[in-house]
Structures are given as C-alpha cells and as structure tokens.
Length: 101
Image (cartoon, rainbow, N blue to C red; front, side, top):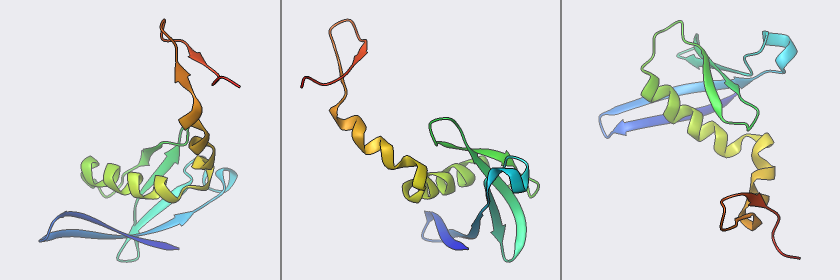
C-alpha cells in the first residue's frame, strides 16, 4: 500500500493510503483509498489512464480526490507510453500525424 499526502495549505494536509487492485477483483475500481485505515473512496483509470472517482462513500471533497488522483497518475505504470507523445505534432489543419522520419 502506498502513502500519499494531499496539501491544500500548510494547515490543511490530508493523508491517504492507496491500494492498487486488478480490475476483476474490485469490479472495476482499480485504486482503493483509505484514510486512517478506513475505506473512503476509489479511483478508476479511463482509456487514457487518467483517474476518475469511482466511489466516494466518505463524501471527500472532489478537489482533494482530484489532487490525489494527479499524484497517483505520476506513478501509474500505464502512463509510461505517454512519454512518446513528445514527438507527435499537429499539422496546419490540426490533425494528429506522426513526426517526420
């Protein structure tokens, strides 16, 4: 289980424990979020590996969960392919095309 801290200000810090699960085990929610050992939310990656709130039984502010999702996305193993996007360019008619070889 990984530990993350979401800081809104010096006086407002939230500590979460994040547990990653295979899709088939949790019925779709890949990341379970705990606070002080209690289940509080879960997150699910979309087709581009951006995380979205799947469940929020503790009614945590969405801003906090989105900040947590951003931290998890930085270490999410499925995002490694996004590093290749630096070589993709848009042409004059804004269509995606491969870089010149």
